[in-house]
Image: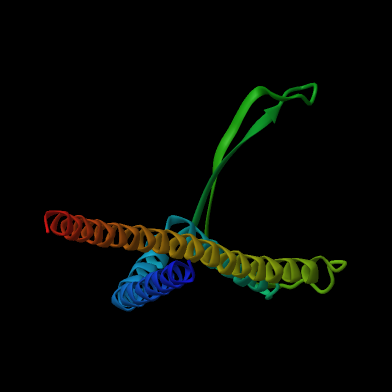
Length: 195
């Protein structure tokens, strides 16, 4: 009996060593593909693309809020001839306009030019401007953290799926080895019975 227990422990040790070696071979053979697969996953996953676009959007919103605090300068100019034709209504005997008809047309011809310059700036808006800037900065931070969290989730899913496939491959290889071992044992048993 002690020899049978000793054989069982040796068999367990051999199986453990074989599994460890197979795992090491599988992991070393698949180390580069895992990195390549994860890089592809990060570059092409739609959630990560959406999170990157959300970061771009929050950065542009922050720039927009900062720009709205700058003074606004307006410059306008116009030049040209102004030709105006007017016709007046004539009063009747009771001083009511229009009943007696219209008067002669009058013309005016002016050369008009106009230039205007304006500058407008908010001096104090009750803390609204500061709140908008802080809110935009917080949105930027949240978008960045969301991208980080989403990246970690996607990488975890990718690694889990990759390891699951590697596990199944190893199980298939171990099953093939078990089949070969069983066939060898069967052949040896046949030879022993035949002898």
